[in-house]
Amino acid sequence: MTGTDESDRDVDRFQSARNTVLQHRDGRICFHCQGDGCGQHTWAIEELGRHPGGRKLLRQLGFPIDDSTEEGQPR
Image 1 (cartoon, rainbow, N blue to C red):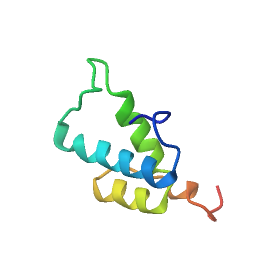
Image 2: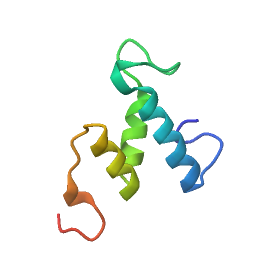
Image 3: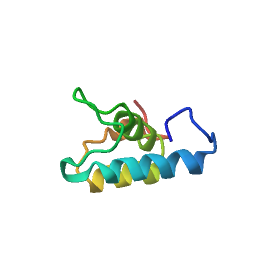
Image 4: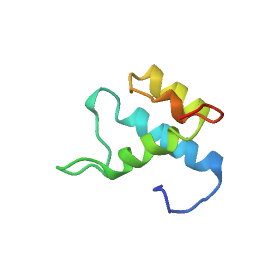
């Protein structure tokens, strides 16, 4: 699934983004990966950054997260 395919439910987008980020752990690739990067992985990181649980997962995986973008926090 990509950001515009199949489902527009938040839970489906979150799960797809979570699965994509986990697939790319430790330098692994997916079938969307190309020589110049992976648009699916980029989308997944952005999508997870929109959700508190996604930001928590990204932090656990070592991604730098800007906490000022969290809801309710001043920018």
